[in-house]
Image (cartoon, rainbow, N blue to C red; front, side, top):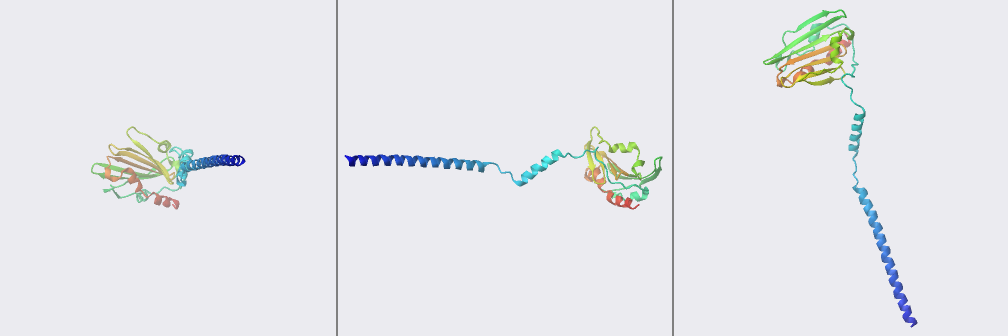
Length: 229
């Protein structure tokens, strides 16, 4: 009898121990699965590349640092002095451009109340249109009449015309352009001293527009000239 009881006790103890081990194994397995799930969740999160982070930072910087408007932009370059002769001004303008040869220039010196003013004007004729380009040297900003300065205080607008600002280290200006008939004007205030006026009417499409004419003016060389005038 004692032997049978001992055998039964050993069998029951073995079954309880096996059940306990199985439960522990399941718990450990569940814990492992939970850790694995957590790892998968972390790995599935979107990783933002450094380049994208830099782009986002630049966009935020731009939003907090708006560009200056046409009205707020001040021209820092300034070299006042004796006005250049009209024939000298002419050397900074193109003689031929976009297949057109400039007509005989119109030049002159105006002796105004505020000071002398030098000007030169060139006309470029095409078969169905033309461009007039003019440079005026006022010598210094104080000589420029208020009705000329007003063009650069507020960006103008005109019905049927698109407006575009032209701002660089030498000055600022604007372009008014009608795309339907290729007509418009470009005004630019150079170094607080010169005013460049370019007017076009039915300008041929292949010429590149008034900005193309404007870029042909040797503005940097003109600045170098007045530095030592």
